[in-house]
Length: 242
Image (cartoon, rainbow, N blue to C red; front, side):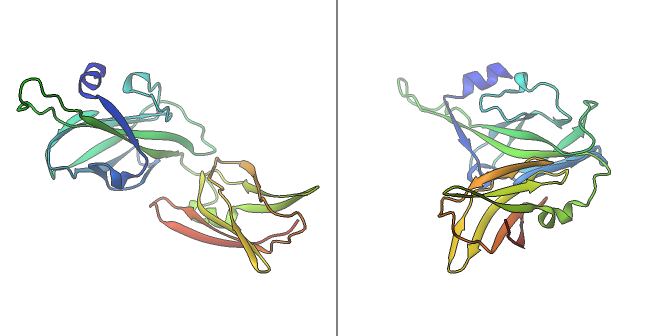
């Protein structure tokens, strides 16, 4: 497999959004429930030409390959296949015997590597650059029996103002066993509001965000959007206090 990638790829282009790739994935994230042991993922070739697709799961290293993936709790099958133009294919995701923490989710990355064909009809002396596309999707491995239910994730988030001399910060706490991915976060008070980049919080973790505003300002509330299992936004609003 390593030889196939090395011979075919001239330039590697990393894309973070599944809609940008010629190979289209049915979802923007993958949640693998340990209770199911197996699930499928639908891929489609949106190109006008056939492609070779290589798929593997790892820790998300930018230069990762199937050979460096290490031990992971889920195995995609088949790992290497050809997709004709417009063709659809279900990839099986199978649970392995690799042990994972049972009190929280674990995060891995699903890699989809799209290799275009080489044009055999080019005139002698003429070369072409072929671009291989690598797409990465978050894959959350979810053990059985986690509580509370994941549907309550938005309301479980905790926010506390932190005042320091000349500075105002916001502490964000995720007390749940799930990863909390914020797509938006807006703090408001009086006639003022500011957007914050909360990003993603691991289970049972917290982070402190700089507000970049005067310390005397009194925010009243925070409105935020979390991404759920289907990739849709779930809106939450909470009052703020020191």
